[in-house]
Length: 248
Image (cartoon, rainbow, N blue to C red; front, side, top):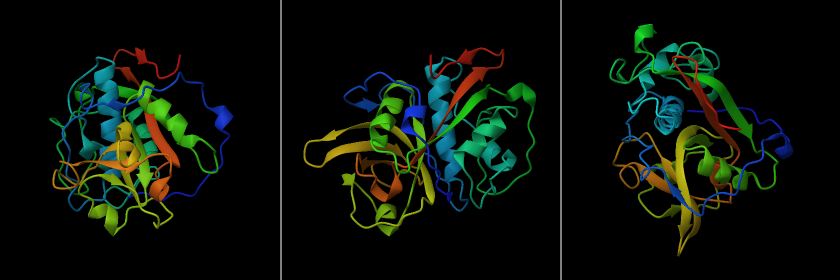
């Protein structure tokens, strides 16, 4: 679950990026792990954060292991309430010092737990966390497209309603929706449907029964259910301190 007050940023403050590719599906590029199931814990913020980091660890050649969602739930404290709610940015902030842990060493339990792990298990660290706001910014979705194209999977918030919960296929595009994000998911690509237009390819954390085996498509360029207002991603460094840079 997510809920955060809007902030105003200047689009010009963000680094320039090259033009985006026409379409992207990071599942085909090996940067996406299998879909998780958060069950009763409101841990969407941690699942989406893990998806971002898994993409970076694989892209940078650091590790192909799944990231521990439970460690993110247990150990993130600032602006995070464990199984009640939280923010991807807060997870990344904790991982600057706490580190990114593998799911094999710290498996998901669907409940609050005690933060306890071995430093020897750390795969990498977050070097720089990013939280980009596109509230009141014209063309924010185009910058998001460039980010996904050149960076990898990113996390975003959406105002989830019953229609989103019931989504099964096609491009999710609704006229009426709530106005505050309450759920976080990962963007793992984008493209254009010949009948329904531009879309974001997303990875949810509601198991394989939601959408298309846990993945879905959300209309792109329309800010559907506040999906194009804020994104989260991170730059990582390996345990030896070598940084895999997001921006040159």
